[in-house]
Image (cartoon, rainbow, N blue to C red):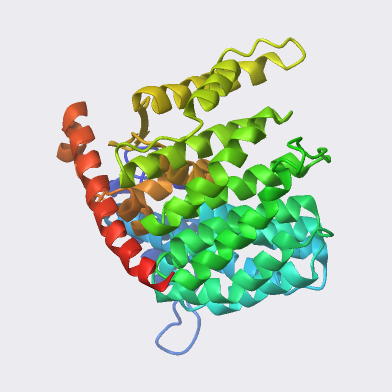
Length: 454
């Protein structure tokens, strides 16, 4: 029954009086049609139209009873029905991943991408995770470039759905080798390699943050891609091939995400080796790659200052000059929007390196808010946003993994009185900052354990 028609009371033909009247009519019609005591059919004395009217009356009263029954438990009925329908559709999508037709497999991957980003499906996926992982692995190994790119995105979403437990680790163990293989394959599709770079970073961050071996392998594979943009032996930048700056950006951003998991000993070597080369790459002709470089440099600075408050890059003056040039870039041969975006980002990067100040960003979802108050936190949030897209706010509200990462606690169950009560901005900010710091301390303990392995 359409939801717009359910539970309407007081309209024509739907009052309590009409319900009784219809029941009486139904009983009378049954009496008229009932066989007599001598086995001879009683004469009904009713026409075909009257019989049809009785059937309609029966249907009407049954429908109304259904409406009355649903009024008391309408939400439960609707939610349960919607969940069953969703699960049936998801089962069909999983079956489509095994189809011989590439078009059907692509449709299945796209449907799973939309479902995984917009819903929390842990219970449904728990018993099907190995089947889905096998299907995704098959698409990554045998599919074309477009199918590989779609499958890699679904890999990342699957890890987010399963969380950081044993189930997610199992899935990552299956998928990491093939994601890494496509990423470093220079003959593979650029779109597939780019998608694999993002998926590898996200899956490793979520599912293998405590596994030093997988973390180091993933960092190494991502490094092997974006170092292709590093200066040559004579100090000049290599020629740019079409599509490679987007691949380098994806690999660099995923690498930066995984750097937030590294122990202090590893951060020292990363800073000394990569900062000078990232600085040199700021001369790149691609605006999006330059922005990714600037954000990564700021994140590395933040990591360095976490270890040593007095941390300074040895060529910090030259770096600041480069950042100032990009923050005030007015070259007319660049698109106006590109110049505006670049200037905005590099002003923030320069401000942080010179004064240790960060321009805070506020993200609202439902009645809750998180504050992006550092470059590490910014990279973590935008990594999830790049994968989840428009579903990121829903996942922040209901996904336990994201709520744990951003220090939000268990998902809120609110009634009308709680929704009407607003917490002050300062209180929310203090709570979020305290929760994130507590999580950072916990992760630092894990870093120390990883340092022993590394």
